[in-house]
Length: 104
Image (cartoon, rainbow, N blue to C red):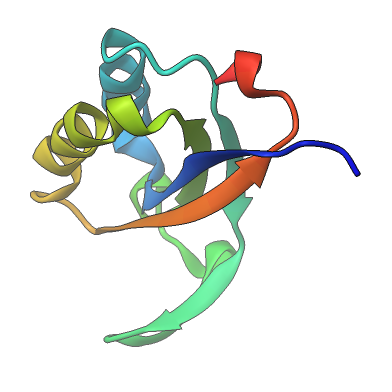
């Protein structure tokens, strides 16, 4: 069996216009990589929403995912929360296992 290593998965859903500030903050905090995908739609406290119904880029949501070494979690979460707390957004943190620990 291949050996695995414990890491943390940080997932942040935000409006596209603040994405640059968020990625800049992650890079400053030494995050070694992330992936961004468009959020096509969903359902939340205001009901259903769909990307194609957005009037501007402000209505376009994206999902940023990164895998972190546990020693970075506190500072990265603090930096991300400093941006997302004033915007529409969701931040989740979960446990994951990876097979290539040198990448994170």
